[in-house]
Amino acid sequence: MVAPWWGYLSSYSETTKLGKRGALVIPARIRRAYGLKEGSLVSVEKMPEGVLLRPVITVPVEKYTSEQKALFLLANTVTDEYYAWAVQEVPAAKWGLIRIQS
Image 1 (cartoon, rainbow, N blue to C red):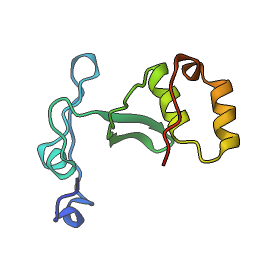
Image 2: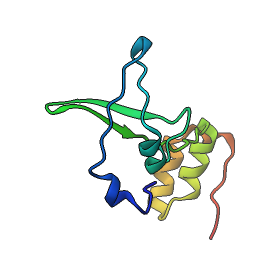
Image 3: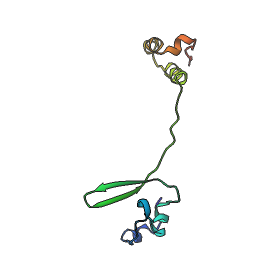
Image 4: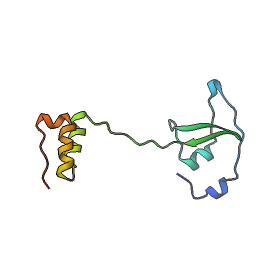
């Protein structure tokens, strides 16, 4: 998230002190500009010019069971040939899952 006044902040710098166990306090002005709050994830990278900090955006990932994967594969076949292959490949087909007719 970038604040509307980001152009002004692009040349902004401030000195901060490294604390215990490497804790670093990012100045409030910069935290606000990037929408960083307590608990926000930040990527730390070693670069030739120095250390680079970047905000990290995470996206939740849904985990599927074997049965859900099998149903998805079988329900989304496009041709009879592909469906026949899926039935051979997917154990769920042996559990009685049937082709969904469109």
